[in-house]
Length: 396
Image (tube, rainbow, N blue to C red; front, side, top):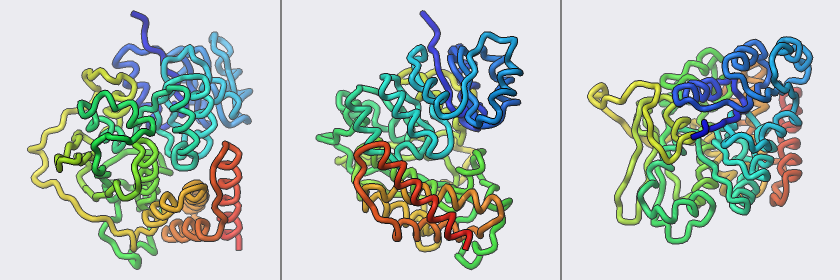
């Protein structure tokens, strides 16, 4: 039996490096790798896993990477064109999309067009272009396996329940699926329970200190503002074809219960595990098989208490804004996502305060005209307007 071949976009990030751990543990082949700018680590990965193709998104690093890999039989690519070439190459069995930001949308659409299954860790793909992505995936019969721990948990909780309908649940056909609602758990980040007055002086170092998860800077800030959970709310709507009133967010500080599904008969099925992204990564790559995972096992007796609380959208306004955006529909989620990306980058650069992230995202959604999404260009136009709006607001 031939080894399963994977391509990874975002291989030097947190999800990418853990994906390579899983791939190595299960003897998978690595067909292609792509990174944003970290050519030092990317070169190490190429020398270890020997892919056929490698891409550096930052085009200024292209010549240097070519030089460093000149002794290896690997095709070196760059930019968005390189990402899309890898995404559309069906020599791989599955594409892991773990890039950060809107840059992930076009490669996702390219993979779908090529008929390549996707393990999706890039939130923006569904937040900004959910209707477009899921419609195209359904037409091409492409499977989109969620890598986010919460969405993976929901996906796992659906197994064995209307199994013949499972494909339809994933690909936008909610008819007779027996789901009443999903319970999307949130760690609450490092600041849950604080007042807005206490959040006003939060530093970048404070916000990057997540109590449970080790993640990249952008997603860690999103977790601190609860925008991450708002974006996951939007993703869940598209992945499982739910209405907003079928999704409930529950703050669970211990990050042991990763999410749950409630069925029409009032049964609730949850997925539990240690907070380690290798578990959902492996499930996406090996589905439907369950194999030993390179992480520690959960011991419930290590936890004296598991707590569940309601979120505070009045203090963490990013959550409120994201839910309002998906309720409004059209380009509203795309606008919020683009505004948030620019605001988070400005916060990390010390240009704005912590609370300004939510304020700018909300202002962008309220100020920019919302339209329907019919094509990729509609998404890009809305994203561009949102980014320009926030940059202008910051510069004043």
